[in-house]
Image 1 (cartoon, rainbow, N blue to C red):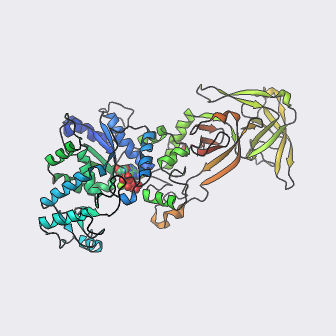
Image 2: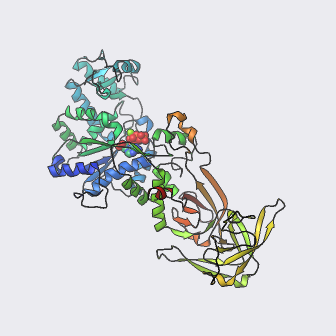
Image 3: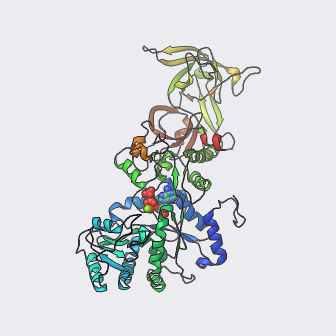
Amino acid sequence: MTDTSNPDHTLPSHFIRHMIDHDLASGKHDGRVQTRFPPEPNGFLHIGHAKSICLNFGLAEQYQGACNMRFDDTNPEKESQEFIDAIKADVNWLGFKWHGEVRYTSAYFQQLFDFALQLIRNGKAYVCSLTPEQAREYRGSLTEPGRNSPYRERSFEENLELFLRMQKGEFADGEHSLRAKIDMSSPNINMRDPIIYRIRNVEHHQTGDYWKVYPMYDYAHCISDALEHITHSLCTLEFEDHRPLYDWILNNLTLDSLKNACLELGNLPDDINYVLPEQTEFARLNINYNVMSKRKLKELVELGLVNGWDDPRMPTLSGLRRRGFTPASIRRFCDIIGMSRSESIVDVGMLEHCIREDLDEHSARAMCVLRPLKVTLINFTDEQAQTLSLPRHPKRDIGNRQIQFGPTLYIDETDFEQTPPPGYKRLSPGDEVRLRGAYVIKCEDVIRDQNGKVIELLCSLDPATLGQNPQGRKVKGVIHWVPAEGALRAEVRIYDRLFNNANPDDKALGDFKNSLNPDSLQVLTDCLVEPSLASAAAEESFQFEREGYFCVDRFDSRPDALVFNRTVSLRDSWTKTNG
Ligand code: ATP
Ligand code: MG
């Protein structure tokens, strides 16, 4: 999928890039690329937002344009400063830089209000006093046209007076609304005199209690784009049917008034020609075994079904971060999923593949025993103890780690079988196995507690096997281990998919919460890690040999009480079927 007009062939090419190439070639939009990322601060960002972030900020980078960060904060009841802070942190973490200061739609409330007055003055908007139920009834349906509101022909003076009184706080929520006067018989319901302002007697996190009327998204968004002289306003497909409204609003305001408002805001550099923004839609990202709606994610948080927005099982960016995903892996994922105009569901295996690929290359190797089983070497003494040096990475030269090897060590319980099934390659009575980076040992005896549970293995060590097999000797298995001396206790959190159904949104399954996986978190508290991990930093990732990729929990881990989160297992299901 390389495009000859694309100067950087490593970057994905798609219909939006083709459109921009075309726009630039024809001189449209004054030859500029100005995008924006417009989250509503009513929740944390999820991986779906990353697609939009990578697109908007990515295009700005690729075309030497600019991308604004704008909080679409027109819904004060649902928004908060906590969400604003989290969203900024996530975008920074992904490695993108917004153009200038962070922007807020609320910073344009005065201009938006003035434009509403302009529409009223021009007979393009009216105050409607239908109750919400009546308004719904008048709106019609997909098959039936709507009917004109009895308030549609109010005089300009009456509209103006009512709207000003709405803003003064003289009415209750829902008593009146301001509607655009478009066409109640339009086949597009969005064009049937949509509400552009509603009364909300609430405090706003940015503007306090000044405003009593708040603009609707469809009205505020296009004007905000215009006030920031955005050229390409990119959004998801559900807004396709809103595009005629986007254009209608801008076309019913004069270009001069928009330009003047930009100047008033100090938002119009001398060197650009003012042009109206245009909206283009792309398909949202959906991933199987996940839900991607903020409303549903919020429900999981509020019901305590996960441990907050940044629970490592959540598809939020802060959850993925805490799980051990890197910004590079998420950006890579957003590159390879592509950009199209048809809805599809991406296999979660592809996301896991991206992080595996990144961690395989960049993370150091280490050993961690999740369920320790003591091994005593019967022919090895404290005096013979030695320090082994193991590479931190099998392919890249990032140094070595030192591990003390003495007569007592721990292996994983699951690496021992009393009666091994055929083809078993690990340890069993009378059999041999290699300890990773050390010697071959043989299980000579088994010690059990009163209940018959195996609590210790007595093994012999073959001193001729350090790092290599003697000629003609085949040892089938290699297992990981940690020395008793210097090993550190750790808590390890093993995460699995949050949902055990591929499509938790499937209506046939009832509520999406029915698909929650009851075993999505397993906490192992008595794990042992090799001593070199004493200096592991918060968020540092490791491949624990044979167990998977793990990272140091950024909040809960302390040097004397390490906590690791499993990012992914080692097995890559996606490459196998698609690679
Ligand atoms: P949700 O539907 O999850 O509640 P939203 O669309 O209401 O999300 P916004 O904060 O309004 O969330 O989204 C900011 C931007 O991110 C919008 O431009 C939106 O189109 C885009 N976006 C949201 N979800 C996705 C997704 N799943 N895939 C791609 N882009 C998305
Ligand atoms: Mg939205």
